[in-house]
Image 1 (cartoon, chains in turn yellow, brown):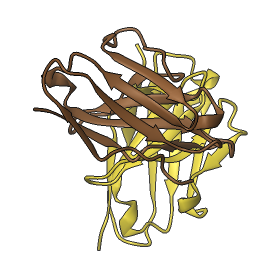
Image 2 (image 1 turned 180 degrees about the vertical axis):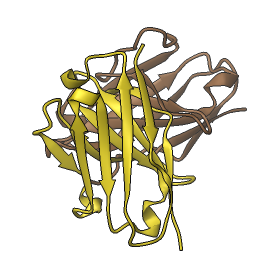
Image 3 (image 1 turned 30 degrees about the vertical axis):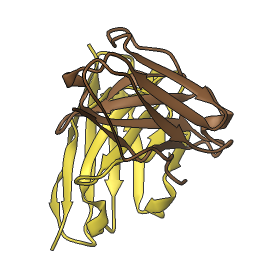
Image 4 (image 1 turned 90 degrees about the vertical axis):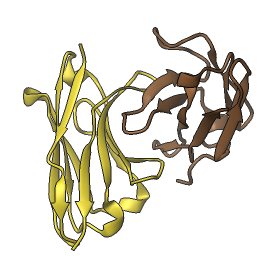
Length: 118
Length: 110
């Protein structure tokens, strides 16, 4: 069965960096677009970034202003999110998810909490 | 990349039907059949309930249905049950090759 397991979250000071990882299993990883979505405490869902199966088609939410970088290692069935210059407002649960053929999201990880605070 | 507009809350009694709207523009909801809906219970990851405007994934109750008219998509829950109490989000692909979520709706079963 499809499994997505995020890791790498934690407490970081403003201006710091963090790298999130997502280990995928149960499907042919390289065949699918993958996406990062976040949810600030008590707030709604916000799309962060997505990447296609080959890694050459990448988009980011405008609000990130170049601070985040998405990547993937198909040989290791892994998705990554490098987050730099972190701000208080980046505090959220970050979900890794698999994108279906017509952009719906049919599988989600359990989420990893990132807390940006001094 | 403005969020799609949903009502903050909708409520209904058990057995009733409720409808959640999701309003976008011709660049997102109105321009594509790629609208989906997600249910989220507190502390849990979201769950896909409807995709491609009106399709239900296997395992999702047929009490959930979706539709679209112009720039507004809708999710209808019929025969409301206590377990339907949750947050619901719409989501759409956009003409900028990005995706966007709705603002979210809290459903309360009275």
